[in-house]
Structures are given as C-alpha cells and as structure tokens.
Length: 145
Picture 1 (cartoon, rainbow, N blue to C red):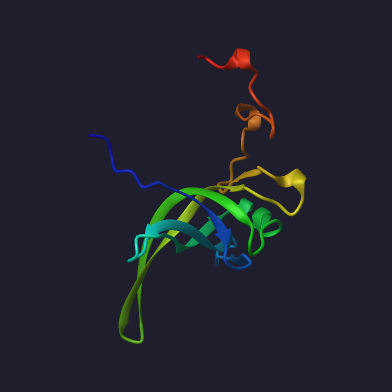
Picture 2: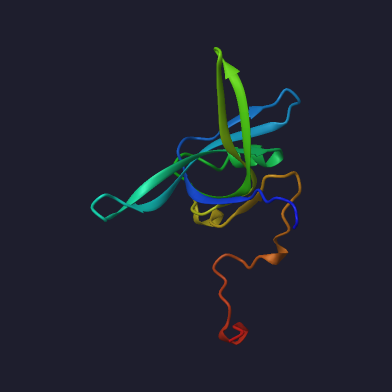
C-alpha cells in the first residue's frame, strides 16, 4: 500500500478579515477563519444547518496577494492538508488542528471579474492553460456520450 494521505478540500465563507503576519524569517503567513455548513437531522427529524469552523493558514507570496483580495463573508474554496500542533500554556497542554492551504479559489467576488480566480498558496505560479475560461461551456459535440 502507498503512503498515507493527508488532504482536505473545503468550501465556505470567511468568518473574519484575514490577518497577515510574517515569520521571524520574513516569510508571510495569512491566517483565515472559515465556516463550512453541514446538514444534520435534529431530534424532530428535520434537517438543520450545522456550522463547522476551521483555521486556515496560507504561506509565501500568495499570502500577501490573498490578503489584498479576501475579506469577511467572502466565499472561497480551499485545498490543503491538516496540521496538528500542541503547546503548553500556564501548565495546561493545548492542541489544535489547522488547514495548511495548497491553493485557494475565490467562489464569489467583490467584482465579477474576480469570480473563479485561482491562487495557489505555494511559491509556484499557477499554470492556467488547463482551465477553461470562466463561463465557457462545452459544445454538444464535445460531450463523450
């Protein structure tokens, strides 16, 4: 069997404005709060929304770029990995799981021109040649069935 897999994909809304910081090395880090709604049945059998909240970090040059475009309430897609950390404060052990983003996609925008924008969170520029322009639809002749 191949190695373990640590991959997560989330779609939700930002719960707060992003916070851009820099590591002692100078590398930028963008911290995001993301709310993702799930559905569950209540005691009466009715479907209700159940929010889940995630802390997301984006590193590198894209952290600075994203900080200029993201704000509380924006809908985004995040592809990344989970990262567990632990520490001790005032004699108590604490821990949390965060999402380290590989890529972030805008799913709505402040302006229509940004919709569907894709920004990877690594230092490598995205190759957009594999993606059709936003709003492009396949012709009936292109459908393989």
